[in-house]
Image (cartoon, rainbow, N blue to C red; front, side, top):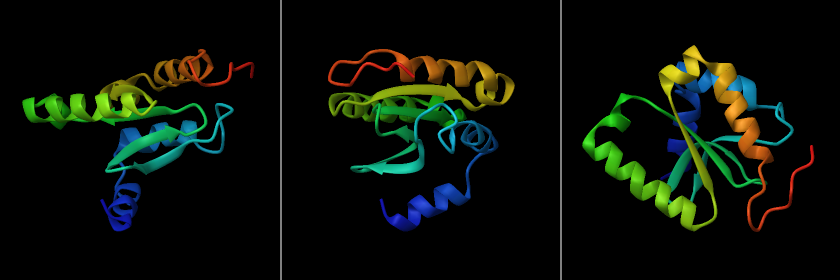
Length: 120
């Protein structure tokens, strides 16, 4: 994946990604998130590097057999290198943004092995 691809993904965010980015940016949840960030060969939608938390916002292509298989391999690899991956459907982000943000907020605060306990 090239830097040009990362820039394109940032420029062409879906409505759901834009809405969620509006709620994650500028340390709104007490942590810095990056959008369309490359981790090795993968580009993740959103990541908090400090807490090793990835948030993916998925469209319908992720519900196709090839998408399901690719996502499973990708998530397993990201888990193996220490990241937790949260996945939400576009519709869930658009219809229940507050619920999605609350789920992310709780994930940021739960203790994880190898990471400091959160008391923010």
